[in-house]
Length: 310
Image (cartoon, rainbow, N blue to C red; front, side):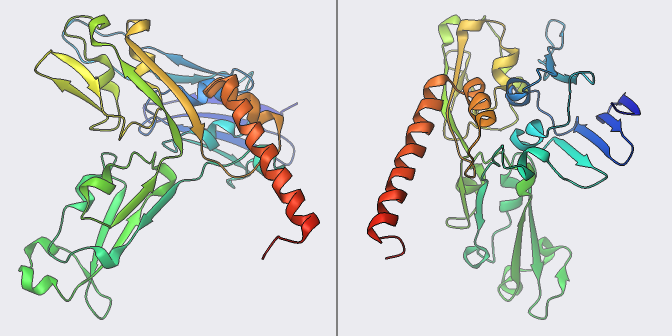
């Protein structure tokens, strides 16, 4: 049993802590990064995480749901840390970002496939930084001798041609919405989603004038308001299927969201299957298990026939 347990909530963060003889477990939820989505609450094996819908007055925009974590139930396994699309949760052991479920190979990690090609970034362009709705892209301009240019916007276009560009993407907090891929200069960004799914809004079932889902969506462009019918619609090209919209929707049948696939590192564990069943469905678990079985069978054949590596 822990020698000491603490839970502290401020405007900026929610922090849980276990103090043992030689181990100190800490969970920190950054409230500025949390969007109140469903992922952590659905996947928590101890059901320690709850979403609290926030009340609103008439004429006020909807607020993102707040996350609360039960210290008595949490065992600091780190599954919420791994699965948060926005990197809002961090679990540490003695100050180090160490996750027991990863070390024991009982849970996979998400694959955030984000590629930035600075060689294709045109010298006259300044718009890539502004493309990210979460401000996760940083463009740095360098002179040929490696010195940083503080304000490239003040330089004439002809002087920018000799500059080199460095593109930094905060991958840890990127949900892979792909907006940068379309808004940055062509060929600069390549992003693959790690959560695939399906989202449908049924406008005829939406309350008159309701924009709650749009109010809380963290990805500008995934949801949009149409003046034609005065309703909210979805552009699945940019949706990351986090479920923040589903949490606040006042009518259960008005918004349908399903996750069909999650891209992750290889794993052989029942813990992941249980999480996937909650996040997606038993059907998706079956598909993944069949895919694993097919791969194992092929590997066995290759090994037996000596094909591997040929």
